[in-house]
Length: 140
Image 1 (tube, rainbow, N blue to C red):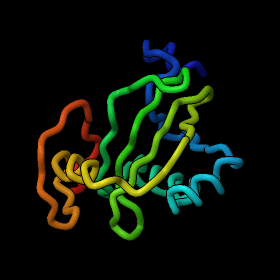
Image 2 (cartoon, rainbow, N blue to C red; image 1 turned 90 degrees about the vertical axis):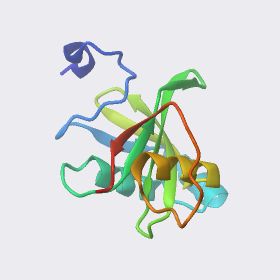
Image 3 (cartoon, helix red, strand yellow; image 1 turned 180 degrees about the vertical axis):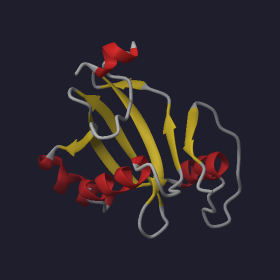
Image 4 (cartoon, helix red, strand yellow; image 1 turned 30 degrees about the horizontal axis):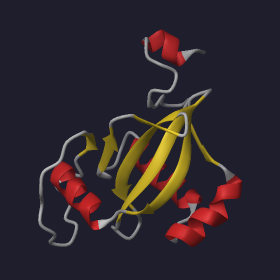
């Protein structure tokens, strides 16, 4: 089924199709990401699955699309199993597959943005202003 054509959207636009979306990552980048960011890409799969399931209240924010390395990407912010704000870079692939490119703990300025968008308590940090990010879930 050609979902993008049916929806009238570009093939690389971020989308979730319940019962049809798959999540993957490059296994060769697993160890690189773990060493560089101290997070497994498999952990990113678990966070993203919690975000897209139709129940629960995991806070989430998704950036506007941007081009990098010749592909359209999105930054997805959410929280890990320990309540830490994390950020992952994703892109859409064929057959309704979300490809996780990298996964790490959010930097302080990113946590401020996340707190402002979702109301999630990031540990008493001051909240500033931001633009260009859409709230997907509010954590309530």
